[in-house]
Image (cartoon, rainbow, N blue to C red; front, top):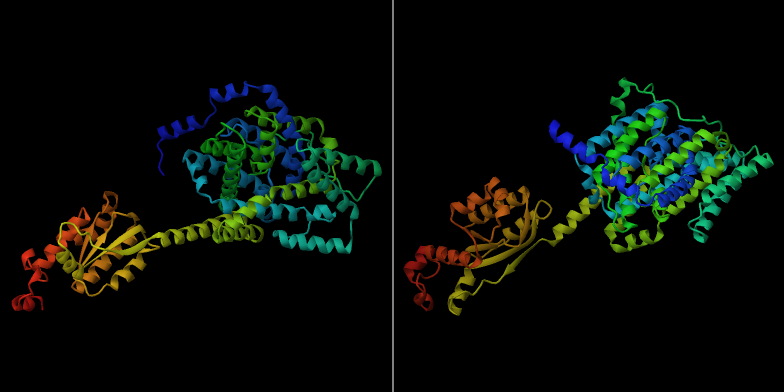
Length: 577
């Protein structure tokens, strides 16, 4: 898509924050500040945990939550979205870290941010609505499984084994644990996860994640449990912005990972924003602005050592449930995390890794909506197949490949279902003003078919086979007023059918071709074929009259109705024969 500088400027202006955003932030700042505080408490252990899981360390997770969270809050398209490091993005980043190192991840994040800005300028946000629900549910289920499996090494208290496949890493971690069990780490992880899961049912509004992490940290420090390995030293502040990580020579090899990160960031952010809309009344996000805000966030985060960010469904849901009404809440969440980075880094560095693993295990469990999965599985066999296939592909392959595979299967099954709706039915001739005797004679020589539904590549060849079997008639009338759509394949198949019937001496007449379908028929020569023989009519009665005239000219039926009761003369028989 080509854009002029003027159009780019206009679109860029439309993507920037406006006065309405500021007015909404002034509406109820006290409520937004309280919501932001609550979200920050929930986000702190998640940011630390996802930073550690990505391979860049807890400080990277904090930097992402602060920088990306603030920029996405200001420039994003949702008043309620909270952005930062997420489990889904961590799943994509682990193999990138293994292959290209930390600098490769930072470069990928920067490139993905640029791609998101370009998508916003191209107004690509609207295409999110075409992702089927089974793909989203399967994607979420697969992510939850991957996030849970990623925490196994820290939950077991063993060094993270080598490998870029989560199933392989998990198996090797289990083998290491059997050789040298660390029951202290297991106890911390299970205790934190249990407190979060049980507490969420008991008091949903209480941030049990931070309470459990604080309790685990206090116990580990008081009891002097060396087996509960802590996060380690954290810098007391954000690093100065720098592009030192950028290796221009490696950009070409990082294009594919960057595209995967950008696709995932777009998908997860727009999905999260849609979830936020559904939880409120009167809120509706701007998809293109959301892509733009996430693009700026991902351009800036790597400059401070942060990992790629997306909209975070769990934190966004907490934001909505605690009463947030504007983007001031998400901005407050980022500011509070910044204060923690500058003021409490020594305390945060003592948090046991096993406790963070417990937080993420509980988060993975809470991501799975059993009711939604059950409903989707019961809907249709196709929906169940798409859900399972996407989930398994997410676990075994790659998140972006899983979504692409799910979309391809969903598209194929949808085409199959639409193709089944297309029908070719034989219908009786309209009686019109013909006498019963005349109508019966016409019916001996004319057959009428009505095409219902789409005439396109997935269904057209079936029509050709059915039409080719027509026998013992002199005229075929195709009633096309109910054709919903036709593509080039359908038009070619129709032309082929007409030519085959003509070669057998059967004339083909059509009625009711819609104006919107004439161009495609004309482009392949089907319309010209019918026009050349004068066999295209606006209505079915006109087509029947045209068929009658054709039969009269061929001498198959008498010219005048008075002759209908008399036998065909020998001269006429010779002409017909």
